[in-house]
Amino acid sequence: MIRSQPQTQRLLVVDDDQAIFKILYLLMRDADRPLTSEYLLRRVWRLEEVFEDALRINVHRLRKKIGANPAGLPYIVTERGVGYASCSRGSAQTIMTSAIPPVQEGAYER
Image (cartoon, rainbow, N blue to C red; front, side):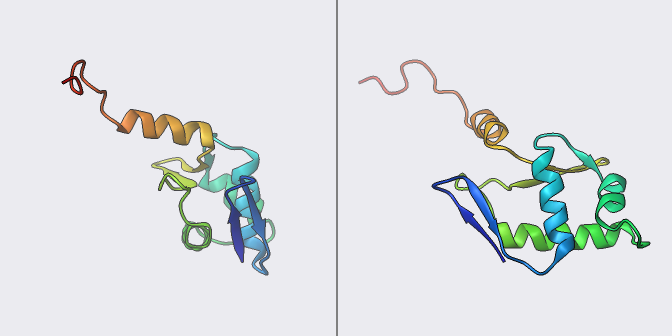
C-alpha cells in the first residue's frame, strides 16, 4: 500500500510488490528527468526477460495507488516516445501556471 502524506510531502510505502516499489524509487530518485522504458525494465527486472507491457501495467498500478497530487496533476507523467518521469512540486507549479490564462488588465475594476 502507498499512502501520501500531504502535510510532510512524503509517500509512505507499505507494499509487497517489489516491482512497483522499485519503479517508484527510480522515478523519485531522478525527479523531473524522464527515464526510458528500457532503463526501467533493466533496473526493475534485472534477471528476468519482461516486455514493455509489464512496465506499463505496473506504472498503471502505481498511479492508481498514489493518485494525483492536491492540484489534481499526476505524480507520474508519460513522456511519449521516451518513458516516464515523476512530476515534482516545482514542475507541477509550472504546469499549473501555464494552464491558467493570464488576467487581462482592468478585468476586475469597477
